[in-house]
Image (cartoon, rainbow, N blue to C red):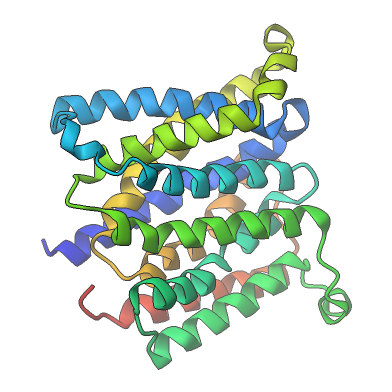
Length: 295
């Protein structure tokens, strides 16, 4: 199995796992401060990934050379997750997932600026089609709303988180100095846990943890293990094997997964016209994956 194919499989798993954050996150976002939830989730995830790193590769001192690298990466991912949960207070899960699909376009820009990864014509076409489909979903297939381009507050907040996520992807390749993905992920997660805990210390102290509803604990468990620990490693792994735009291409599957999550949780399906945007998003993924070049 080629390294590129391994990277693609890692991102397929990533897209499936990350989608649950939107459905569960929207249910829990109103019951806990985003910084408090994410500080705890990063601490838990850091412990899990740290144990995995110790058992598989060991945690040698040389793996933590230039620790500022982990603060940069951790800061980017910490900002992404905090803004995601802040945005989900008002944004619909499917709409937020559509915002997430704009990430490849921004990742392609950062990939060029930071790594000089050139975008092919097919990749540019795919990103354009995907962005159009994303906007159609974000505006709930309402042409008048799309023409007015009045984006909701939650979607706009989350968009800036997605910019931070897009910055993270090429920076993994730029800052990695040969560390295994799981070890590098552990360092980035420590950085995220430290920065988010400092930023949300007052929220952590103010939260009445004993009275939180069960959905918050379910969400915290899911995002700590599946949507943080596992996806961090998968994203690191794929980022070292695929161009940044291709890594982020798999975010195009997120709205599809979120629709499945929403249906499974009994929240119904979006109206039929929204699926036109979903089809455009899936077409963008197919176009990107057919355009294969060495990483």
